[in-house]
Picture 1 (cartoon, each protein chain N blue to C red):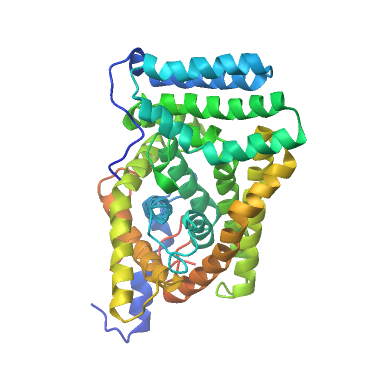
Picture 2: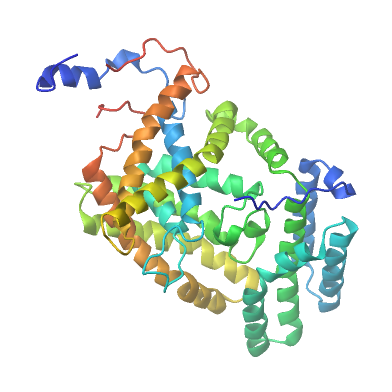
Length: 215
Length: 209
């Protein structure tokens, strides 16, 4: 054991030699990354459970599930964030009742607001791409912008047209999204940025396909 | 969490393999969305509703699948009544309901595990672009296992928060939960490596400490 004050040995312990890196798959994911994908898919599911997250007491009954989508993109990055969302959606499609109100099955995808679920994939990806562009990852404005563009713009870009097609009215689809989803999502964008900044300060988030300690 | 969307039974639809059932659903949905005459859509809706007793599904399942859509359905039908014809409003409302009811019937007659096996089989061609089927199966199983773990981490964190005298839950509760997830991912990753499940190539040396 090295003494904790010895920076040389600590560094050596955390930083493996480059030739010991064969466990990444061809798409560049370590077993640790698979675990992160599963854990964040589970987090999105837990955020959809009733009573898990009462934002302002219980006065505003918004579900926090899309917050989980934003967090997956913000914290895990584009690739793992999108795969975490995909994992959840596959389990939902298989019939597990993991969406708010215990909904699940194929019906939620072919339903009128199913486009938003597909939009989650793009949303997590866009947030992940943008967050890596934010210099100094604890800066709030950049994180908020990334979450707005991914968590609202990208998700709605798929959700609204699908609803519009199914109800045969672009106006109605826009009304639905701005009344049903926008107020909650605006709050969640800020929350996701705050949480991501705090997590970045508290724990170094490992990049996909890299061992901990590696840059 | 004890609620599942699967409804056990021994009907003919339960016996149809998941692959053909899903294909049939896709064809039926396409067909329904292509029809636009109010009488045809009405007939389709009647047939769909009759499929529930025909597969010995209880009435409350039909009602439950309808009920989740009702507020939205009322909005759509009312909106189309105001802006278009009554025929169009009924066709669009009917199509929405039929599609959701059909999909609900497929989900109700197919076990989650059967559906997952089908999805994993459908994902097999992705092996060519580097997606290992074993890894896909592992992540899906791991997620199901992780849900109660994450839920208990969640409750621990919010209990600790309340024990310190904070009255309302806040976003700050989420931070320790996520840090805990990031930490446990390292341990889980090592456990996966140790079992050789997700290793595509041999490990030359296990690093760290």
